[in-house]
Amino acid sequence: MKIHHFVIILCCLSMYNCNTRAEDKCITNTILVTATAYNSLAYQTNSNPNITAFGDSLKPGLRYIAVSRDLLDSGLVHNTKVKIQGFDSLYTVKDKMNRRWRKRIDIYMGNDVNKAKKWGKKKVKIEYCIQSNDSISNENV
Image (cartoon, rainbow, N blue to C red; front, side, top):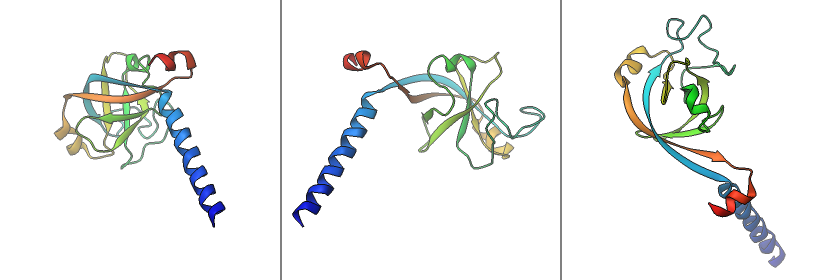
């Protein structure tokens, strides 16, 4: 029985250490952006409105965002998880916007045009994690 408890404790400690290391490699970034909303409709996107610029499929109910291309250089790359001010859930970067936009995100709202219009255009803070593989810079963070 004691060996069983030891194994459980050892597993818990090893999971804690893995999680701690993963967090150590994460640099949190918070920025203010303009947030609009979009739908998977041809007049808002292109002739294939259910496929993103990264090649992912869109389906109503998914928590996805498109980002302006300047934000890609800020670490908001494909599949990055993003916390958007005012929302409880995390959103995932799955699309990129036209090159004309700067410091902007577009929140995917399926086919619900009224919901997207109701959202409108707002300034919001977003927070996301940039994974760092550089062990030297992690020691200084």
